[in-house]
Image (cartoon, rainbow, N blue to C red; front, side):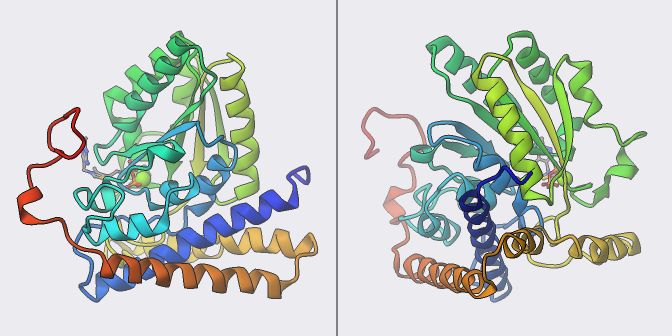
Length: 328
Ligand SMILES: Cc1ncc(C[n+]2csc(CCOP(=O)(O)OP(=O)(O)O)c2C)c(N)n1
Ligand SMILES: [Mg+2]
């Protein structure tokens, strides 16, 4: 994978750091009681969002889930607007009405984050069908978890995408848990990726903690979709470090998780990419400076969110129904 240019590796590293530092700070703010919206943290899975989105154009579209701070940032969403959203402020990306789970940044192709498990899959298929009907070469990505593959709509959507050769990439982030139930307590076999072949799609399992591997697989999938070759299903194996929701380390859901977590912490996707950059000759001081810059950006986002106003009470029913008049 030494064909990935160093500038791209560095860009993915910065993306991953922005996700990690943003969420570590959000975790602290939740612990302090400053943030009330439920936050499903993505820490540990950063290589998936960074690797996939680095293979996309700005006009390519993505749909995210309840755990999508990472997808929002990786696709180019504004950090300050996401922090303000999490604080419920009027300057938030969803005008303070969505919170952590309902993010949107259409200007960079994030058409929405959807906490209905599996909801992103039919939405992405619809967007890809629209692109095909419009005759444009836009690619759509659906991000979803391993739990989403246990919903019927996932399979209906995969079938339609295969049948119509739609320009879509299905990214299953298999973090081995759906809420507190491990994959192995829910399935007879560890075979999520096999669903792709059953529906007539190319299915690939990739190390989701290896940003370079994710990017390589995504680049092929995106090229296939863009050139009329149809959809691809990528199963990215990864692990969420924190609890299903909130900042805890989730050690109260069984001894097994404690042992697993120790193992997965040693596979930190950011440390891994940092090692690649160091091996490629990037000085550690440069990488440390990038981290300092990111931490300063997170602090600015917090200050922006805090000084922003809440929506006024009389705006409560605004933007509830579609209106040609955007002020309603
Ligand atoms: C249709 C539906 N069923 C149940 C829920 C409750 N719920 C929220 S997240 C979640 C687990 C999802 O697991 P997975 O898809 O693996 O994503 P992860 O949380 O691991 O990122 C569940 C069951 C929901 N939001 N939507
Ligand atoms: Mg999961």
